[in-house]
Image 1 (tube, rainbow, N blue to C red):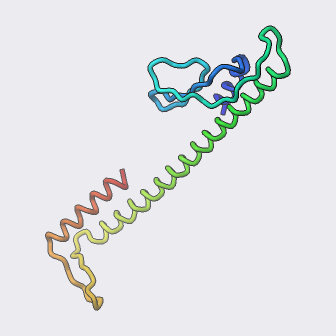
Image 2 (image 1 turned 180 degrees about the horizontal axis):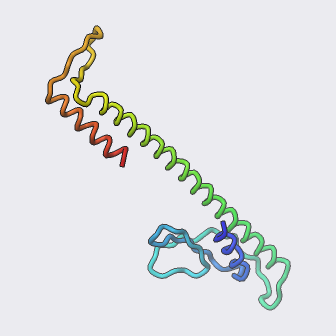
Image 3 (image 1 turned 180 degrees about the vertical axis):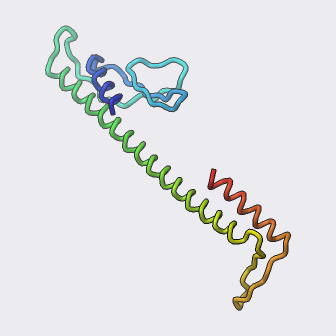
Length: 150
């Protein structure tokens, strides 16, 4: 939020007719500038055409264009903040799901450790699996633990 505020302050000095560019650096941070960076893929942000004005005086049209530009920038930043929050919520939900799966597989592995395991037949009877099948299932559980508990 602090960076957003500083960015908005910096845009006050930028002419209303300048283009805005957005890009991500190597660390994935989003940057904005009125100067097009070299050697990186940039996105030109949409703008409405600035009203024609005399460059020697500051007219109400310049002020209005500047306010409109600041409003658009604030909208863009708000949308990006909302998107980051949504991604954060999705990531938290994924972590919670992984944690539940991890606990479920750990509990099952503890239950079958040192015991014979079985499947249920059509009539509910127990059909014990052989050692080869048991070992394969234990390996599957260990793979799931590696995936969900890391």
